[in-house]
Image 1 (cartoon, rainbow, N blue to C red):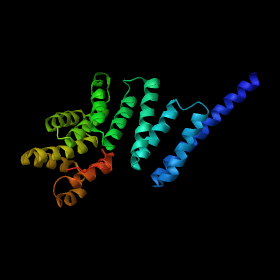
Image 2 (cartoon, rainbow, N blue to C red; image 1 turned 60 degrees about the vertical axis):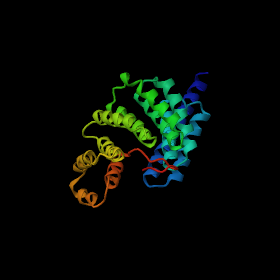
Image 3 (cartoon, rainbow, N blue to C red; image 1 turned 90 degrees about the vertical axis):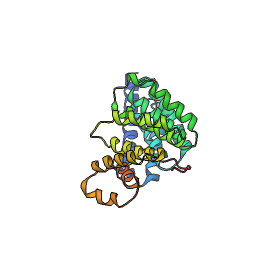
Image 4 (spheres, one colour; image 1 turned 90 degrees about the horizontal axis):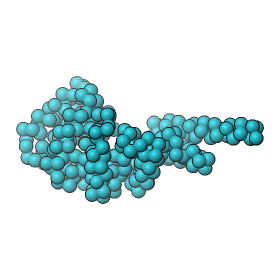
Length: 248
């Protein structure tokens, strides 16, 4: 029995080691733009952990989140929703419903519903997260959630609610973070929709002033916030536009 136990521990260690190797290889290939190779590595890592009963672990959760990220990048909406739904369930069991990581996965699940054209489900998920803010000490995550809610509300024409959430998202975002740039850009769009040209220009100038000096002349050469949005999203990851829905 001691030998069997030792061998079992060795197998488990090798499983975790190999799964981590596959996960890391996926990180390398995604950086080079080879998304199909990345998907293969990460799906093999997930399958290996699943086979050996290791999927509901922090490392398994990391691989699930990676696969969700990849599905988002490849516009595989149903896969994204399924993967983040699983990540939400696993993280709630491992970390609890008020942990920042769990709330981040729940935010991504709501995002997937929005991307799939299910705004009511998406907003319901976001509002559920907002009700748990009292225990979330991560200001960046709070700002991301509020920003996400505002984008959905803008799409649904709920402008007063969107303005309130963008105000809060800006207040929550750490001043030196790229999140400020992304929120400012959406505030430009908000004030354009409200017909407030003065406020729109003010927010645009405020966002423009935060860009590196070498990028400002190029940004000024375009109308609206398009280049500012590209600049901010390139640096921060931003919040993606819905795949199958037009945006004003």
